[in-house]
Length: 188
Image (tube, rainbow, N blue to C red; front, side, top):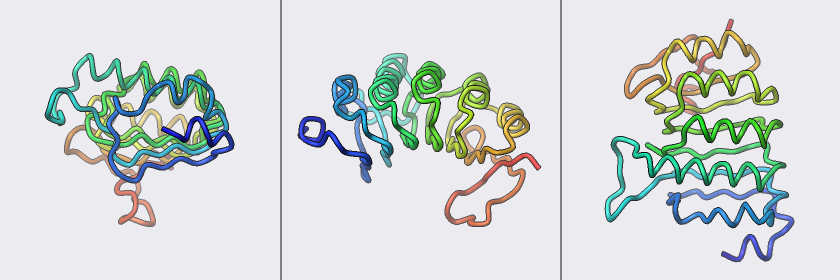
């Protein structure tokens, strides 16, 4: 791809359609050629194994590939303030969250919808990402309502947008713009 070779001053990169995790080479980010990037957004981040897109259980292989890519992004793009890697069953785990907190401490918006983060990952986000103001975690099936409530209680300044589990909602207070974000949690 030409971007990482010929656009060293690029600050925003948005993929508005789907992007396969394996199709986004880690070398784009690991080489530091996109180190000035401030916004990275992928609307439909997914993983394909074989000939079919997996929409079911997250495999260990998928998680290792997704985590490695997220950590490469975090290391290679230290200026990111917005990182939105949303999809269904992306495979992103707490390991990637540890990479994000280590290399992107000034992150303000994080979207990891469809990931496999747990309550432990939510707690790490709450404790380590002090600049974070918005967290999108729709369709993260391994976190619980308890984890979300604990995060909301710890970080009153953080807006958490999402749902708990595959179908359940836990509204504490609805957003002013229901059509835009769905369900939000705030500590009152």
